[in-house]
Length: 310
Ligand SMILES: [Fe+2]
Image (cartoon, protein in one colour):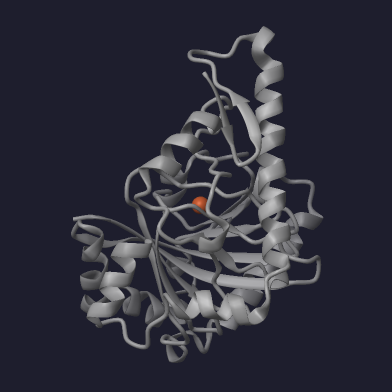
């Protein structure tokens, strides 16, 4: 099947790709990269006023508001600027401890190491897969490789640093939050709590979905993120239940190993989620999103709660 999309002529072939068709898969991969680069360039040219206006359209003061519920349902995302400012006031201490642990680990030749309190690993050198990492007996400090190389993802950071994260974790489990999440159509409860630390992560995975069915995460910024260079979470409004975008992107990315890449998007709907420390974002991960690539001296830290169906 051949079709034109966003100026690209694409030919889709059914079934498994054998070696003779590998060239097509490589070509598709390069088209996906090209489209993602175009979106990044587009965003870099947007004025601050335009970004602020897009952000304002999905931002609310209070978590328990009907308009916020409606916003999440319609857009797949809603933001509450600085609403958890108090709860995150001490988290810098935990973040600097993580950075020290990773810095010392990187000086060693090891690809993984384990102490009484945690497991630390580069890529999938010891534990593989999100569920295995999330359910490991100890917190796991996971240094990502591949498309988000260098990003530090601490699974169950609340167990590693209870004194610093209990307050924000409790806030993410409050009735007002779980009630808001029920607007995604399911009753949800908190599952696991991660800490993301990005320090000069200049290459990030392109626009993608985490899954094709609703999967809600709550993000709390632990550092100010007021510029593209700092690597804001970036979301495409109204993409979580857009079956046309999902079908097109699935057909294209299905030609490669990763079936959840989503380079075909409406640029006018992209929102770089700027926010101060303590800002809370609820996001349906079946919507199209990415982390904006940082500049080499940038820093961003985020607490993340993954919710699951009751
Ligand atoms: Fe994602």
